[in-house]
Image: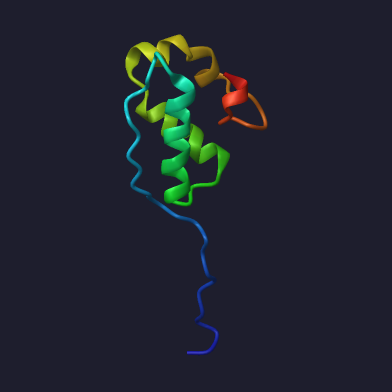
Length: 83
């Protein structure tokens, strides 16, 4: 019916991304693999990338980077240059 149209939404509620365990011996290559996963799934939002990364870190890595997790850099939370 005219007037009952819903606006189109560009928001995605869930994307399946396979993030490998963090490579402590080669974090640069690990971030490259994670970026490839984001590209395949068309994840472009900086904040979404940041939260995916934080959610997939093991306890030891999360503790090591706790200051960044608790107070992310602004405006770019997800950036290899910041680590």
